[in-house]
Length: 242
Image 1 (cartoon, rainbow, N blue to C red):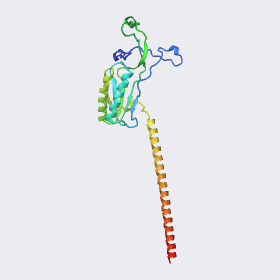
Image 2: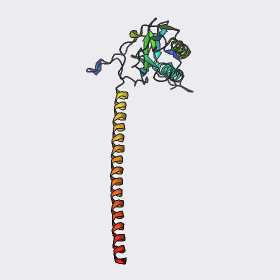
Image 3: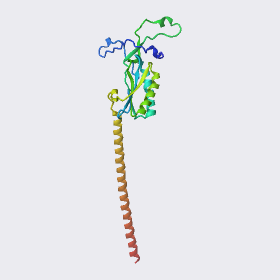
Image 4: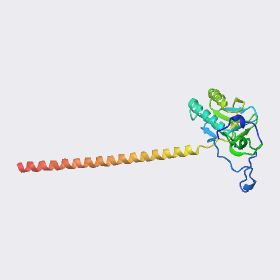
């Protein structure tokens, strides 16, 4: 069945989403669909940023995970293009905990009686959504300069067209409000590997230079030996001629 419009799920509903890890018979739902949001932290967290740009919800609403992922991709690509991949840090501040349900009904000719279904049926889990209150920060972007902050604000405002609620953009200097920044362990490991490879290349170059020097010394000694032999032969010939 195709994905329904956002207005079908934007209103807050009772969150029957209990998942009991140990006692499965106490579950409200049978299972939880996989998370579609691929990343929550993007950019470079190691720089000292001075400005923060927040995308704030202006009404209580449910935001589906596919909308969050679409907005995240749009903002990330635009920031990389405009500011560079190492000149910003972005974080998605909400998590899609709520599990949406849908009472799947038959479609097509002759399915009128079946398609009516049950009134207020519990339904089957079809995806996740984040429950947002008024004033909740959805996305936060850290930047270095005021000009970059204005650019990020324009990008966030443009990307808000994919969200099912009214939003506002705020620029501030309270950088610590974004929380603890992650450590770039993968990048550090890659840098260490690159340094190790560079050291190995240097060692190999030095070893090659030493081998070439040894070969040059051997060739010079061989040339000297051939010169001495040629001199001895000339001396013998001169003696025999006399």
